[in-house]
Length: 255
Image (cartoon, rainbow, N blue to C red; front, side, top):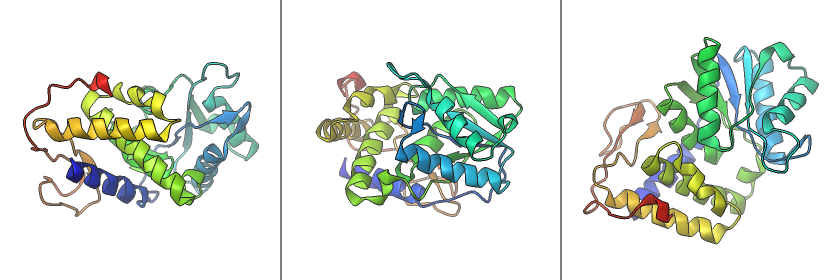
């Protein structure tokens, strides 16, 4: 279990340090974040500023903004992002929006549908460093040609305590996703405001991963030329099977 968790945390860090903005892309996809009315939060601003800079530099012809409207909100995340981008010089004709996603997996399912409807195949995803591995994993599972360009200015990455909290949350969310599939990440949302509960759910999720001998628990996106022992392949999503005991009978709903 410790080996699984340690390797996952290493991969979260490693992917967060990887910027692939030099690769051709049909769209730049920005993952939504919190906002206050029509004003994006500092985390959201960091993502948007980076994505807008990429678009202004000609990295891709479209900016695809994501995020639905939470209960009690008057604005969807994507609408807040659209207003912010247009105010900074991105024309409406270059903006696509996904306005109904409530979590990472849900938003990315909608992104995949929007891209296919518009004849787009490849995307450069923008989010925080700790979020990138899960974003790229889900996008690849949806059949997208996915690359990442994390923002370097997000408050969730700049302070060590925030970086640790974000990494722990991502470890749990990634573990739940790998076990339960695209709807599984929702099971972790209720813990997101309580670090202690997040840690407990992460521990439970990683234990389930370690005990499932047949699950592809470490199917992470590795840089080209990287092939650690026990991982097949030299690039893309390589699959490593975990054999840490007998198959668990615990249900993921316990997390």
